[in-house]
Length: 241
Ligand SMILES: NC(=O)c1ccc[n+]([C@@H]2O[C@H](COP(=O)([O-])OP(=O)(O)OC[C@H]3O[C@@H](n4cnc5c(N)ncnc54)[C@H](OP(=O)(O)O)[C@@H]3O)[C@@H](O)[C@H]2O)c1
Image 1: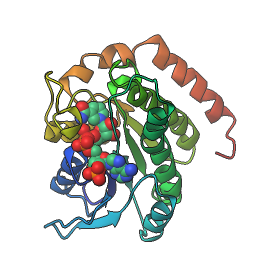
Image 2: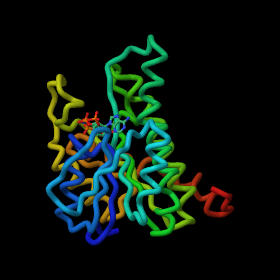
Image 3: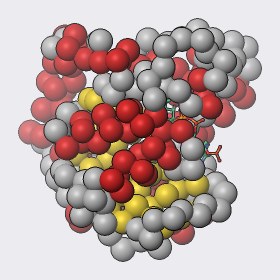
Image 4: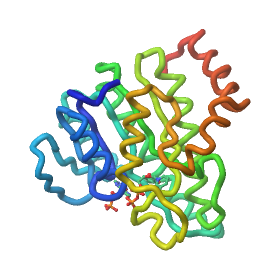
């Protein structure tokens, strides 16, 4: 899937990696970029259409989907990450509401358009889907769930011609990681690598040096092989997914 000429929707598009994804899609020649944000957004490029889109708000999701005629690429990027220690159920619910159910709700709403275009879904998850960082366990749980959702959608939607990618993003220099004194990739380089991954048809995209260091072992590992074996059951016996 080339980005040039395509219609792209990015959630959480006003800052951080989402903002960089909008810029990168434009620089690759996207025909239209829908920028989903919680506050009004002004963008100098006429190809950008702001969309009022809190991913936890079912009415806003529905209205956004109804306002768009066609879509090739959905990037579920909106996310939250807060410190917690698993002592409060509310913290877990808050992360699941945005990072799991937000991704789920937006995906379901735009699925008819993506099926029509034989499109692409990219879920910006995290290396923490594979290995939690114990200062943000609720976040890690939500990203693990979102990654598992991504894997199931990948299998379920393959028969409808929709490709589903996970970006297993590592530390990136945004508001989300302010306060962590660790090496971080720039959001611009991560956005480039995510769209490179889509254009190169990489199922699981490792868009920064830290995540890239585990890419080969993941892609050639027993767990990935099991994902493919399990997915083959759906391909063999398609259900009403
Ligand atoms: N930074 C990293 O190291 C890193 C690593 C792995 C994965 N990721 C993932 O990358 C994605 C982007 O993160 P980032 O680093 O760019 O973080 P960020 O700078 O904190 O940006 C988060 C974005 O998500 C939006 N958002 C939050 N809750 C939302 C909601 N309910 N509805 C719609 N939008 C919402 C924010 O909008 P507001 O401005 O309105 O709050 C903002 O645009 C996230 O899914 C994150 O988990 C980041």
